[in-house]
Length: 91
Image 1 (cartoon, rainbow, N blue to C red):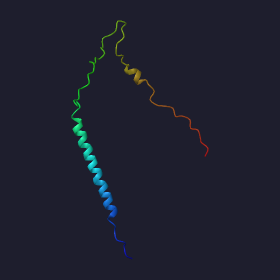
Image 2 (cartoon, one colour):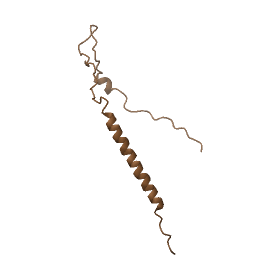
Image 3 (cartoon, rainbow, N blue to C red):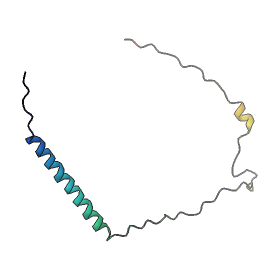
Image 4 (tube, one colour):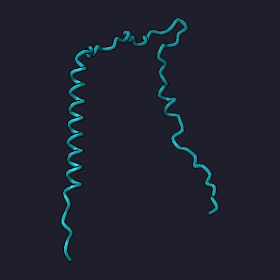
């Protein structure tokens, strides 16, 4: 069984399109770089207000600004969860 000769005509078209595309991208990049020199691209750090941490000094009513949970309250918390009821599903 003989094979048909390979045609290079379609290959030449695709290579030509590839070359045109690469030249167009290179030209666009060149124009963008040359045009970009007209703009000020200097980045400045954003200014933020000074942050202050809350103080630990007690308030006049005797409570603290940062309440602390007593370790006994955490130790007495329930450690297990009751299983939920399972409802059968009809097929």
